[in-house]
Amino acid sequence: CGKRNYRTATKDDIAKVKALIEKGYTYNQIATELGISPYFVARIKHGRYSINADGTLKADDLKTKTYS
Image 1 (cartoon, rainbow, N blue to C red):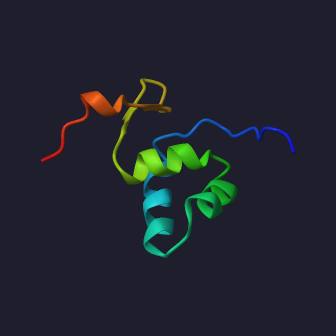
Image 2: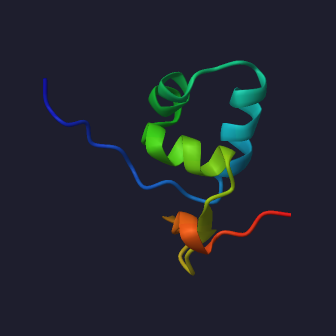
């Protein structure tokens, strides 16, 4: 069992992840479907990311995120 190679999540993945979550897919199923890590699926679901200038996603530090 080796480490999987996932592609970098992009802003185009945000809507896809949210749609699959609403359909009841698990993080691992979404990760397999889209080729991104389950970690980033969770980050997208909970809004804990920012978008880099090149369109890739960056995980935000949980301590800096504010919720309203």
